Image 1: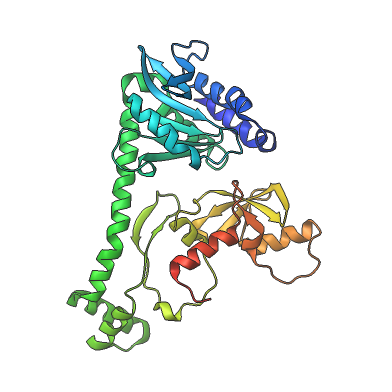
Image 2: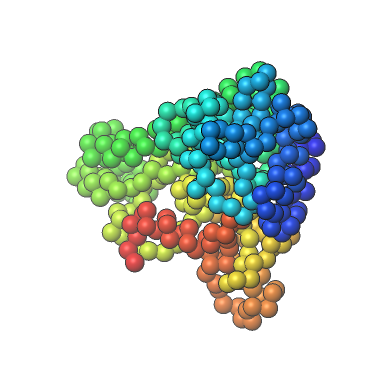
Length: 354
C-alpha cells in the first residue's frame, strides 16, 4: 500500500498537470497504475478487459476473475463532471449483474452497488477524492474495495455492503431526528420542561414557570437537526443546541460547522485562495470544523477565513489597507465551488431573512 500512497501524494503535487488530462491520458497515467498497484495484471485482458462490450455500449474496464465480470470502471477526463454519466454506468452494470462499479475522472472516484434497490443516486455508497482526502485514507479505501485478492475472496463486496448499510442507517437517522425533535417540543414531556426550567434558573437566577417554558419550546419547532463533526471522531448526527425562533435570525454568517453538517464541505478538506479569476493553487488552507477556522498550510497557523484572506490579499498586492474582508468570497473548493455560494445554500435551508 505504501507505493499507492506515494503515487497519490505525487498526484496531489501535480494538480496543474493532471487537470489538463484527456480521457486517454487519465487512463494511462492514473487508472492503470492504480489498478496495477492493487494487484491487477493490466497486461492480461482476461483480468483487465478494456472497452468491454455490454450490448450496444462499452464500459472502459471490466475487472474479471475466473471468466466473470467482477467490477466495472468507467473513466472520464479529469475535468469531466461525473454526474451526467452515472445512470449509464449503473444501467449496464445492473444488466451484467456486476455488483461493484466505479465512475471516475481519475481524481474523484464514485463507487456504486448497482444491484441494490433504490434509484441510481441511492446506490452510490462511497467517494474517494485523491486531492481532498488524506493519501493514506484514500489508499486504504482503494484496498478495501478494489484490491484483487479482496475482490476474489468476496471481502471487497462485504466492505462495500457494510459502507452502504452504514450510509443508509445514517440517512434514516438524519430523517428521523427532525420528526422526533418536532414531536418532543410540540408535546413536551414534563421531565424536559423541568430540565429546561432548572437550566434557565442556573443561567439567570430566576426559574421560569411551566407556561413560559412551553411557549419557548413552541417557538423553537423549526429548529433543525444538523450533522456535526467532533475533532478526531467520525461524523455523528445529533440535535444542535436550541436556536432562537426563525423570525429572530438575521441573514448573514454561516459557520464552517454548518457547511460540513449540510454535506457541502468535509472536515479536513482543502480550500484554495482566489480573487476573482485569480486562483492561487499554492495558497491552501485546511478546514478545522471544531474551531470554525482553517490551518494555513504554509505556516501551520490557525486563522479565520476572513483573517487569512486579508493577509493573502495584501501579500499578493490586491489590498493596501487594514480593513476586514468577507472571507467566503476568497476561498473555493478543488472543483471550483466558491464558499460564498455554498453559504447561500445554507441560508436558503435556514430560511434566513434577506
